[in-house]
Image (cartoon, rainbow, N blue to C red; front, side, top):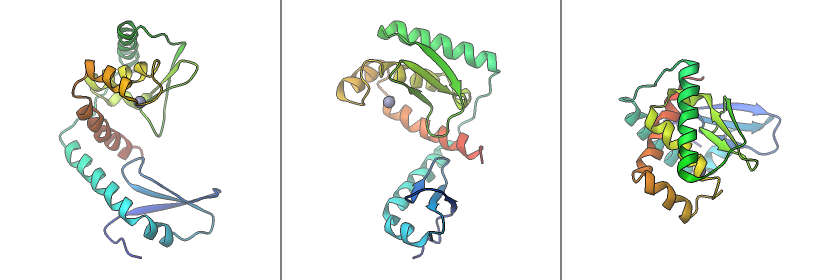
Length: 179
Ligand SMILES: [Zn+2]
């Protein structure tokens, strides 16, 4: 099995099944202890290639994007005011807002109406920060990405597909710096 053009790293862990991750824009194979990478790479090579070209595309677009730096206070104040606006606009209600480092997503909403903001969002320009927040707050009404959800989002952000793409670009930029 050959994938000479695709760099990857392997992490052997106490897991039952092998998995592939692209969290930071680089391919990581998480393998059960003692398992060799060859078969899983071989089995998923088409998926890997597709994913790699998506990541490359993102990184190419990312070269002209700058990571934003705010102080902790600026970040929290801005985030909280955007959350307040989004709640007013959608008529939603949250219990708590938490700020944490997360490895897999920009933000998440729990079934208990708690919103967790990834601290890495500090690196996003304001319009993307605003989009992520509105997106999550819109999930208060529709948990899933159904038609009604996207309709609501697109009423405010008719370019949301472009914004989603930009978020990937920033994700890989930010994630790349984590390793
Ligand atoms: Zn969502």
